[in-house]
Image (cartoon, rainbow, N blue to C red):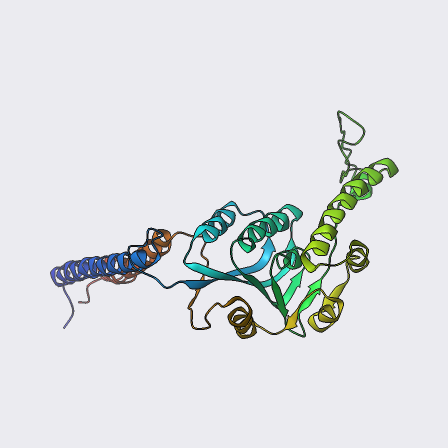
Length: 307
């Protein structure tokens, strides 16, 4: 028997009421979960905690992340954090990003044990992030090293000339437009840029020498941009041991008296409220869209009656 318009409208109203109550139930449940977890993670200590080990995951491009730096500072001050594991899987990043992360982890290392665990790749700024650690673990197949600095520019002047495009540049000084994609790099400009690259490279080498307790000349010999496997890096003194997080936890227990049974919690740059409420809203919106808008309003109300 075909559905008439009144029956379709009644069905729509019923589904809307069910969706509303379902959404409210999700919000109430999320609020309860939020309250319980907030008590657990509240720095004021409303709920007693025996402490935990924090895990910082460093992956992808390493940039200068203000939120991350603020989170790491809170981690440093949090007395419940007994140690920090830095899990690295990154090919590198910006010079300033690596420097900021290195500085933040160095401050933590002054207050509590820090260990680094390298994954598939921990190169350039990814390797720099491991240097503040008291112990660096790598897989035998980890690609690490790449200690160096690179500056790249594009010279499109010949292509623009063939297209008949001419670009006028009015710099305030001879080096203000170096590098410039619209004209070749001059010898003087190249030397000025190399001066900057050499200084940045010296800073990186100094961090390697200090972090790995190497003579500066030895650190510089290894800082020619080469990559190494984890097994090679172990022989060169760039890492301390082959292993992963289980080996790192065992070392913390043996050398730093950090109980192996302590839970590990990931360091989150997003706040607890942002994570919890965001997930709850996503669930509610998904429910409303799937069952209220899609099922009823468009597909049912506008379905033509069958005669």
